[in-house]
Length: 439
Image (tube, one colour):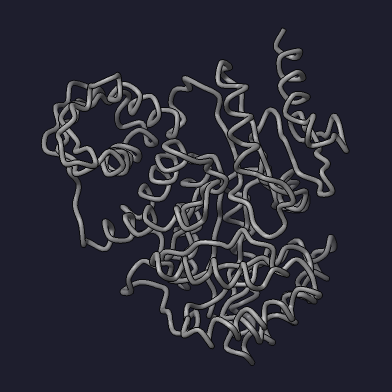
């Protein structure tokens, strides 16, 4: 239970999102939370970077309750168990990666056990969130930076919860790589079944990007799992206004809770090639339906190619041929890229932003995309802050990571090649380095 919201088998899939306001800007955060609630978010996450933000979290919750907003709040914690312990009485859930509490595993376990006791006392749920690229050296030395490592690490922390008789727990294993993400969740689901204690799963593709690509990539990964009965709560992470995430998440929840179906009307199969015919009520609905209908089959290599025909309705209700202006071919290319079967453009990793982001992430991401669209076979990350950026862009060839104070670090792979680059020069510098490397 997260406040009054039940999460788990037999309950509806719970859509959630996260504020990108600064937590100390209480008025802006409260206003954004109200917009999220109105759009259909069932849970709202807010970053809580340090102890000085705990009073802000308490005040945000107070003002929301005063305004009649009872949507449960989740405090997003990254390194400080002291912050997690301090904020637990004021929120319905805390999201933590316990391995970040301390480099010494035994000490991290001790601090996590202390947090568990505080959460038990206050009725606060915990999300154990382990992302690809931020597993820590102990686990990666044992299992590599792999889906298996993600599942093994999660099971270690779940065993500690079981030992402490604490079951108000949700687990997530996110990655921007849809193959890694799906494999990790499948392994964890199987491990929990074997253990005989199955915790609810929070499912999402982290740093999915924006626009069509972000929506398609999110649907490919999330629907692959929901179609197998894996996943109880979801977030669609888009580098956009967070309210824009919610309609996509609600679509997924409605589809896999059986409230809506697909607009697919006919399928022709020839070997591993598929031709799909749609009569979709909108362009976006076609994108989402196609991603769910064929994303898993592409990921699992049941099919190799898919093409699209049929119609979708424009905003005035006029039928538009799917083939018009090459849209069907574009949709097939995007779907194959999201399933990591064929890359027709750069692969972008971009976080949605949160209260730690100190620059205009959405504008910068659009600049990077515009300047690098001609490239292929390169993975470029645009990350909001130094806290998560270097770890979570594990698959990236190049990275743009905000430092704060109008400065940026440029990464090649996992190593920073330039630090403290002024943000007015950083996009030019990133593009120059990529082009010089490819020359």
